[in-house]
Amino acid sequence: MSKPMKNFGIVQAVLSTLAMPCGFLVWGMAAIPGIWMFHEAGIAYDGWHQLAAQGAAIGMGLLIWCILDLFILGIFGLILRPKSVAAQAPTQSWLTIRWAFMSLFHRLANPSLQWMVPSFIGDFYFRMMGMKIGKGAQIVSPIVNDCYMVEVGSKTIVGGGAVINGHLFEKDGIHLAPVKIGSRCVIGTSAQINPGCVIGDKAVIASRAVLPKHTVVPPGEVWGGIPAKCIRKADGSKPE
Image (tube, rainbow, N blue to C red; front, side):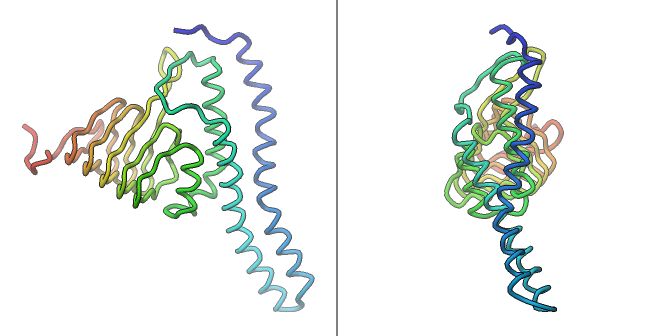
């Protein structure tokens, strides 16, 4: 195991101080088109026409803000995302800092992303952040953390509020592990999929189920509960 990074606290404090204003600056830059439309509507119209035009400008400005926010942050993700391989390092390490930046980008994207899923815009952002998405998959939840560690097969549905994590922290530090979800699977509402899980084709993870780290779900099975266990086998029978 590698040794903790020296002066981690100082590095963390400096980078956090720099990152926070930059994040809010991204939001501000994404708002420029909407501000311009609102301004132009106020000049071009009078009376109730002005109110209607400015109201429309606010609505369209918010839509454009969502799209630009995801696009800008997605570019950062393209540049800085780690490789989608299992990794482990002390909490006080460069891997933790790199993970923290990617997590910051995703938190900044969440206010926009929650309105853009499921859609090709949301999928475009997920892919820029490193997520592999099969044809026809429906990603309804914005809470796909560590996108660069996640693969979702074709025609799979990830339900609203479902959480997929590619990381966890333990006593020995940060762990990153890929999550692979097969084709034609269903991840239920508010289910939680933890790092290293492999879910076979046509499997179902029930609503609010919590799948422990490194769990392997065979194809076609239904799993539920906390922690999740098999509740129906692929042949329709119940486990003994």
